[in-house]
Length: 461
Image (cartoon, rainbow, N blue to C red; front, side):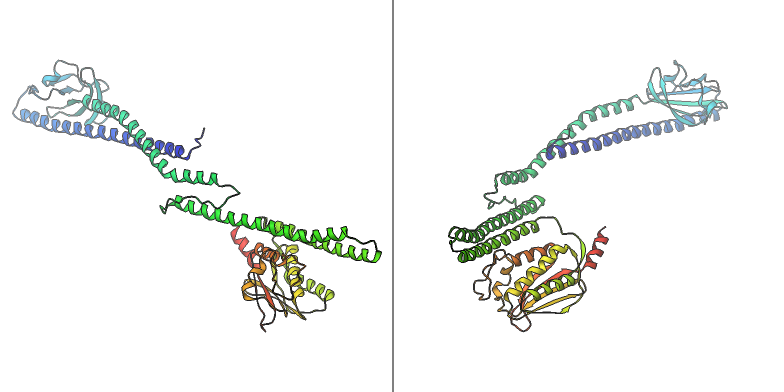
């Protein structure tokens, strides 16, 4: 089963990696040591071959008929001169009373005459044998053997040592990694405990930053930023609930009072009924706006369908002309296409025009045009305008300007908040500014042009 602890997984990974590396190094070390010792034996055999060959040549030059190899030498060296059939012609003291070093098939009958080969000897065990033609005469071969048992014993001792040392090193690496990772993850555990103690009722707490400047410190900073956003969102939600409760209470109380005090007189009763229906209609509008805000606050993006913004603007402009006495100037409306939800963008246009109609004195001007990468939509009115300090606040929820004499107090202050949410979901910007002549206000909305969004989506794919 996979360990659940990151610390355990890192430790196991480090131990396995150390085992692979150390095992490889141990294998290379033993093979290198064995090869180095074997080369030393080969060098000794080469020196022996040159020395003995010179002695034999000297005796042959002196006319000696019996080539004797009785001179003393190392006890682990055996020298023999063999004939073509492998019989001993002459031998050193260590090679006389023993069988020939080579048995059939003899090297000179099966391959190169001069070579170094490994053999197993009944007396010396593992030996390294040098075979070369003997200077004493034709069909005689100088055979020199040196024991390699010490080499093999050294290799076995080294392997036994490594079998003890390598596991100890692996265990040491695992222990060090366990300790180091544990200390490195200690701030993460502290962050986990801090976050566990934070509840939805109190989001003011923050996790402690280790102030190390590393990834964990940046994680703690990001957690604190997230907690700050959650706290702001929670406060925003609580304020929304409080504001909504306050706004709902007023029309509900009015309708309840009107119905409760309805007079028996038919004419006055009908007037009370109209007032009660008006209060209930305000309640319905407010509930619809709250529901729309909840939908806009969802994380799902709007549909990416081409929408002709100019067509929507002209349609809603005609509605304002029919329902008010205002002059609606659409001469500055030209083609402008964006990607998004037609219903949501229609709601945006309707809310902006409704807000302008509520405050305009005589005229509303509409602008739609395309720039290089953007579509500009602006609505200007000739009303009293908005003070500079309130131009950002008008897009907050439940915001109404009490000092504005033309303000319609029947609204809940959600119209422009809905506009801001729709614009934000369509990756645009919205702001309130003065008109060119300084009278009234212009709501300026900028949205990405449809062609750029389509090209960007294609490039991403």
